Image (cartoon, rainbow, N blue to C red; front, side):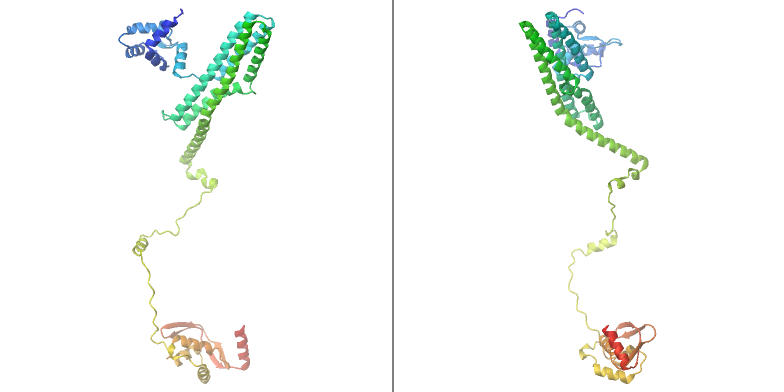
Length: 420
């Protein structure tokens, strides 16, 4: 390919910058018709014909044919790299490329050691130029990786493409493993890359000492040593800045992606086997909730709504029953004893009291019944089953007590039983 005049190239780039930018973003390639449409779209009144512009794109090394395709063109790699640098659309460099650079530096360092040993200054000078070029490539690739990683992280955060959590995590995970870790290898003192750079530093210091009397060679060794120092410093800065931008995003998306995968797996099991297949109760002991004590009867709810705001009043006093005789006093104890003694024997004491004291109230008759059971000289025996007695408006159930003359011994036994 003939030499291209930089003046001609950059003058054409200046006149057709919009066209070159549009071609740069069409990385998949274009056919003849698409290129012609682009040229016409960006054509200005002072521009030559579209055919002339397309011919210049090929002669200036901006476009070349895509291998294996017919009438399809793409932007050449050097021009694409230049526009990527200008537009900050950085292409990421993989670990294999960086390792190849370091292997190249190892071979060059071996050759430089031989040149130093035989004091071949011209050979050493050419080797130093090549090593400087390789170190600059590593530094530029490191800087490009940093800018590319930060730019991609910002696009993932904005998420204008509306990607899912899993898709975003896969992109960030690939950046982390393929591009960020090689940057760490450059600055990690335990890695082989850092050890190789240490050997280079010792070799440059030794070369500067060997050619101390040759000022030109001494300046070259000092310059390449400064390039190595800048490479290591910039690589460390690039790594830490990339890690600060990508690290928190990687951790956040990793957790979200794990949660999404777990939820998706649980929903899949739920769809196939039902809720019991998840074993939620056994795993986290969910409490069981029952609707106990709550109102579900509509009639009852309506009743409570009706009495809402009700204020209770004092209950009216109960009147004594018509046959109450409490105001006439109680049955005299001695009179009660004489009348019972005179009526012995009797089959049912309570029935006798109800008939004999019918003018008294029920409470008075029951009190008399209790006092009568404690009278001395009278014996009582339970007769038959339980009876029902009518005392005015009350019904009383009790076992009938037969009464008869008693002895002193039986009175003592009854008193003892009462005390117990």
